[in-house]
Image: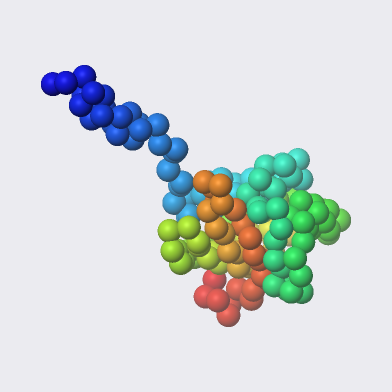
Length: 148
């Protein structure tokens, strides 16, 4: 074989081995990378939590867009004042809208000082941005109305 032909045949093979890692499935990402951060002292993991959000988040509860860091930090501080300790993901319903957009309905089990437990549900929209899932929208939902 001619050297130029051999090189031309090898270039596509080399390019295939240098592909970026695949984006994890939406449900795997949400459960293992995002939700797991709330299991123990989430207020100590603000940077990690924020890394799962786009820079700006649309909060459907009031129809406003917020800087994700400020929005998330404010929420965590309010929860701590209420005696919140941590949360576990209780139920997750994922709807893959297309390969790069997913909708999540999540039911959280919230633990508070004094042994109190509460449940809260939320809807999230995440998109693949720069090769990773990022939450772009949020709304509080009623658990029972959404089958959670």
